[in-house]
Image 1: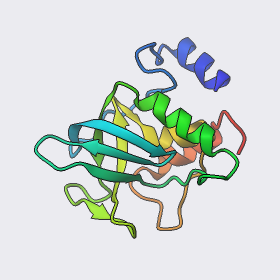
Image 2: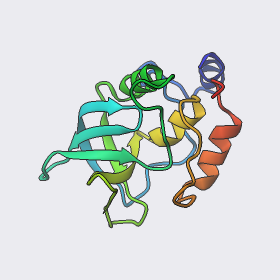
Image 3: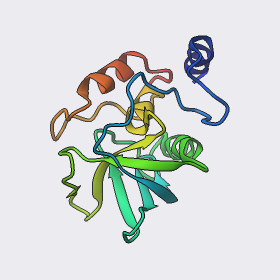
Length: 155
């Protein structure tokens, strides 16, 4: 985290309004849904959100797999995600633009953005998950691969 913070400050891409986030060069994809209000952070890769005109949904963040409760790193991953999302509205981006899909537990599968930061990628960059390719690499594979190379916390 310290290295990411220093790099972010030096590059001018980190702001106090977004603690723990290191914004990427890309902007939010045009097919993003939101802004959505974060209602609860469940763990390091699952959140509840309320999007305008829709019911509250549980979101499973794509391409990451943080530790489960009772596993080492669980509290740190959950805390990091809470820190990134605290007080922020988010946008959701689906694997197939405009086509929300659901996972095995009925959760909506999505990439979560705060500003221009793909939070899923940032969780990998901070070392709380690896780039999870069990179900393919997805539309942001290059970003995830770069995040793994730049991990600030060994996993």
